Length: 229
Ligand code: CTP
Ligand code: MG
Image (cartoon, rainbow, N blue to C red; front, side):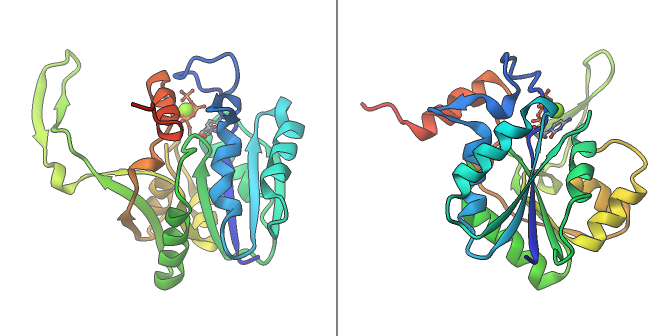
């Protein structure tokens, strides 16, 4: 396959505060990881799917992946995650097949991301030869504060984007960025930008929100099973 999707699912979910690692928590009857794989296996073209899972859940991730894959023509690889998201992505990068030229990195925690968002990222990378990252405009007024919590200036929000995943890149650019990474970043685009490659922001989708807190989990449940009036 020419495209690979690395789904990072090795985090503990400390902010969610569940006994299970976040990707294995259920939302409306199916795990977050399982739901996050739906749009990946719905892609029209064959892709290599790499699930990065906690060390003690590799078999479970493998089973879950093949259940969702069904008869879809996909290549599934499961690898053990690292201590940080960045390390987890690096471990996914290490098992890419030789034919892969475009790499998407996706948070399992964005369990409701529509297939169209994957297609848009793949198309944008193919058309531009650059990284492409979905983002949404910021609607709140954003303020910088000092160490005591006193408001400093208001940041011009017209210049800001709240970015999501999947983030897609030409493989060589992402590999260079990871090889040169000097510090820990919370997304892949930061490293690619620092390596000197331009990354475009394309329109995101509110449904690609990240399940981070218990409130987000309730919201995801609402989206999947709306209360009947
Ligand atoms: N992730 C990972 N390996 C890590 C840390 C995070 O694969 N060492 C993954 C998570 O599983 C998640 C995605 O990166 O799908 C985004 O991270 P985040 O939402 O921060 O998840 P957690 O790190 O698990 O949550 P928290 O920060 O609240 O502990
Ligand atoms: Mg985290």
